[in-house]
Amino acid sequence: MVYFDVASSAPLHPVARQALLASLDEGWADPARLYREGRRARMLLDAAREAAADAVGCRPDELTFTPSGTRAVHTGMAGALAGRWRTGRHLVVSAVEHSSVLHAAAAHEADGGAVTEVAVRRSGAVDPEAYAAALRDDTALACLQSANHEVGTVQPVAEVAEACRAAGVPLLVDAAQSLGWGRVDGDWSLLTGSAHKWGGPAGVGLLVVRKGVRFAGQGPADERESGRAPGFENIPAVVAAAASLRAVRDEAAAEAARLRALVDRIRARVAESVPDAEVVGDPVRRLPHLVTFSCLYVDGEALLHALDGAGFSVSSGSSCTSSTLTPSHVLRAMGVLSEGNVRVSLPLGVPDAEVERFLEVLPGAVAGVREQLGAPASGQAAAAESTGDGALVVDALGKRCPVPVIELAKVIGDVPVGGTVRVLADDSAARLDIPAWCEMRGQEYVGEEPAGRGAAYVVRRRA
Image (cartoon, rainbow, N blue to C red; front, side, top):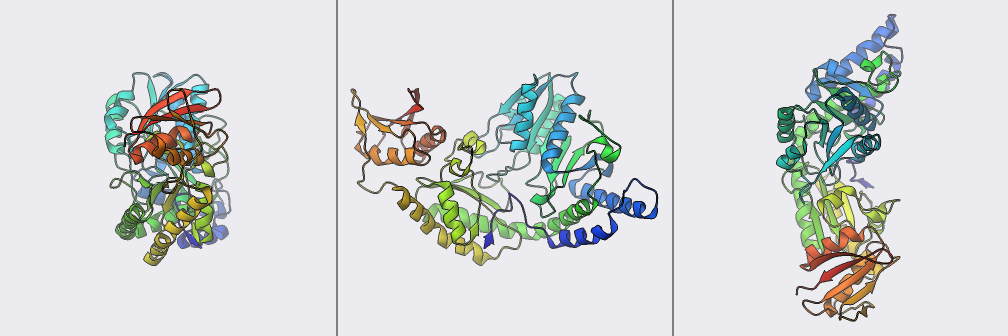
């Protein structure tokens, strides 16, 4: 098996494994105690904090180790919002933040706070001017990821941080995806990360709160980790996380150019060899190891199973692979196709030959899934009814992604130029995928109309 999903979780780095095993023997004692074993544990913890702070670009006393990256996000947001309650209760986030940020924002809104979501371009990046315009006199906190976890787009953090600084608003940066590649630029105020994203052990996050940022920790606290992460520190895991961050950084500097070239190859070959595929995310301002594409007329879960059977572990943001059956909020915010979505995130040191083998397997895997689903072929038509005004109606009620789009594609050739077809669907992915299909196929998406069940999506044939 070839693992191409390090954006979800990277395998434990050899340096992390060595540090973890060594620290199990040396770092088990309470670092708050003054006897020899406690002093030894404290030295390990302090050394790990200094190493991590150096990698992040902050002071050691600004960095707190947390039980996870999600906990770091929740702690950072709650503490910053509470610390600035006199300013107001307005929170600004981008529409493509990690779910941990959006869940915290939803909890804040449910508690009476106000939240503004800043839209993104089709590339997945925010417009710094639009973000700045969302800041208000009562804004207590702004949040922006350093790079997107699903499509790899790098956000303009430095520009947004400058706008936030001018407005007197602290900016929290979720750097989980990018921290293994380097420091985050800009004058940010808070930063979070997660060790399992860069090859450290799971269960270790980090939270940085710059000096001068108003912060009021929420919930029960104790004397550990500045009161921001109560409970006994997992010193062996913390040491392994810090050691692996430094090791990964050294490798990333040398690997970035090679991986970027491999991703460029994937982007080009997918566009050439897979019909009706859309590569999403910014082609230039992106992480060097990550690429995402979507394929029309493909069930994401079936495609992932096909690739898994061929020996490749990849991820997807398709609604077809989600237990909630809702499309990725990132792809929805970008306005791109969600069906048949594949995210490839390459590990450090991946052989070129494995990437080439993936590109050889992919077209056949996509074609096989399309054949199973009955995707449209030349001259093939689907069952449709005509309304009184001559418009065609496709009944896709009760059918999941990507079937509504497949049915639409089968009948569009029977619609006269300028005529319309109404697709009845109750799958939430249709709201995203039908407009995206129109964009890709050069058809006009007229809009959504209410229906007795689900909705009617109206498409006008252009040519």
